[in-house]
Image (tube, rainbow, N blue to C red; front, top):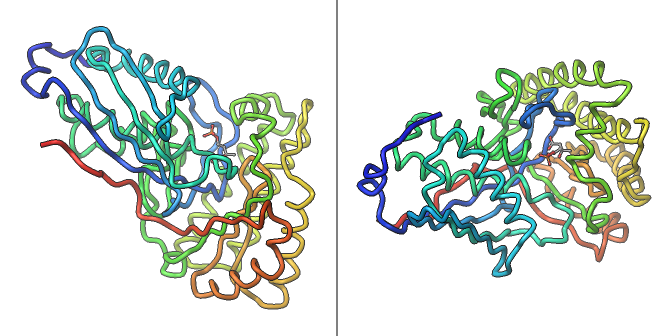
Length: 351
Ligand code: PMV
């Protein structure tokens, strides 16, 4: 627990102070599925940070022992998320009691549509925790050179996959520490310009939350083998990204996505999150790729939508393939055009 002095807060901060950050979503190439304790992953994961799908968070704090909290998502009160956030900050206050000295107003918005089937917990938790970490930095409770590391650790406590949204490019979480994510360095040029076409097969809310999914994984008959395999796959994936080897990348990416869904389907309490059109898209991709040799593979999150991960040099081919062969399989023909991104950004400060 980090102690503080009340007059110190007043000296360091005006009565009311605002923080503003945007943080991106990310797509896991090797998935986090299973957790213990306080959101600690049972295997390591590797993801690519996105560019266009992100959350903006403005946090205004007032020195106030009433310790109130409100959250507006796209100008509307969001009571469910507000309750989650209150619990999160109360939990962080056990480590940083100074957080109890404030009332908070959060305003968040996403660049991607609410019902697009894109999980917003990673980008929103990352943006919110960047604001909280900046508050802690201002109060000298966090050191400057540990800013992103600490923001990643706090984000993880809100949503596991959010720990990977703190850096641009590729991020691993769990290889060296389960506490926070770290940027994968020395990526090959072949993987520096990569697109992600998010094909919206179905935007309805998932039948099974990821929390329940993690829980069920802990009772899964194959769990030990899965955790061991996933850790190996992370090392392989990182090697591939460093060696620029698209030929090995595609099968690893795709078999991992299907393994995640295979695990969901093979537990005692099973569930199927793919839809018939998810399989049709995958099938068409496999055939088309064989004919064209395009550098593109698919991955799936815990839902029916398909992410096509492709080499930017093959973008024109991929986009015309989507338009000609896939849009009929998508909900209102919808897909989100995204790509690798550079990570969070500080928007403004009131100095
Ligand atoms: O961060 P959570 O608890 O929503 O879990 C995310 C799990 C997957 O999206 C399925 C995989 C991942 O690593 O992002």
